Length: 98
Image 1: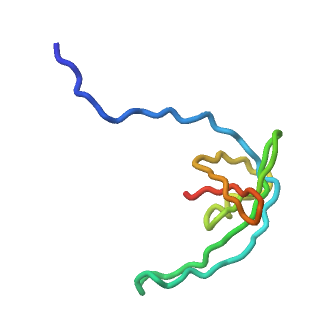
Image 2: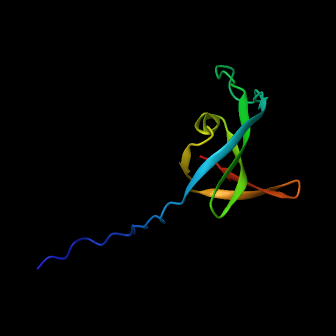
């Protein structure tokens, strides 16, 4: 009887999502990108917005960047994965890289 080939990849179960709502979203600033890439690259300014998000248990400021800003409309529901806490001027901020 043949045995199936051994695989080294393991499947990782995703954690159960936590749903949170956007309470408010305020644009902070547009920052021009630095031109340290090739000259054929057209630099778009970075957009940053501070959004208050939360659920029944609490709320936190979320720093939205670039295309994330468009998703942050008051009342919308989000699922955040790979989020991290950044300390900024003595307060906690939530951020997502990608």
